[in-house]
Image (cartoon, rainbow, N blue to C red; front, top):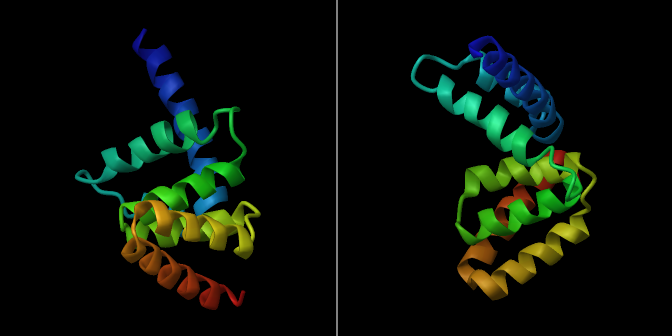
Length: 132
């Protein structure tokens, strides 16, 4: 039974790692995985299996929608570094600058103007970095 559990974990890890590379970017993800140590390796495993396989690979929503949801939630929580990563991911997933603008405006109304201001600041930096 343990071999079956390990195979299931390995399959989920591999599928999630591929999705995470597609969304966040292979260079960033590879660096984080390669730099994992005994302390933070369990977090990398959680991200690859649970987050990017079990959730991101579900068939119920397209990646663009998942990206837009993440932008809104991370904006609401004022999580700038993760918002930056998921703004890049949204662009990688084909989300447009205009769609991101609309999500950030709606987040500002429902989550608070300071959260929206921070979201627009981070998004503007990402757009500038990417030449958009």
